Length: 106
Picture (cartoon, one colour):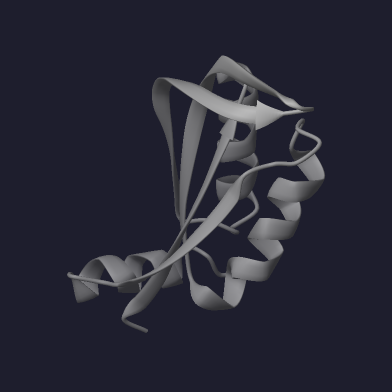
């Protein structure tokens, strides 16, 4: 139970980030979701380089809830090709890992 997962995505509007965060926590797919401030992203899209302002969302979840969380993000994400990155973290604090696991139970 020491391991947790952090799932990160970016979206083009703060309101969209807030909805993704709230839905994941309300559905017990994430114990916590943090919406980060604006970030400027530069990337290749449709044969050209683009720059846009985006908001990041970081979700903390238990490994056994990871697939369902990723699926929900993918289904609700407004991008054609969403960035959904998963990091497995060996928790530095067992109490935090326990809290994440407890709050991702349906």
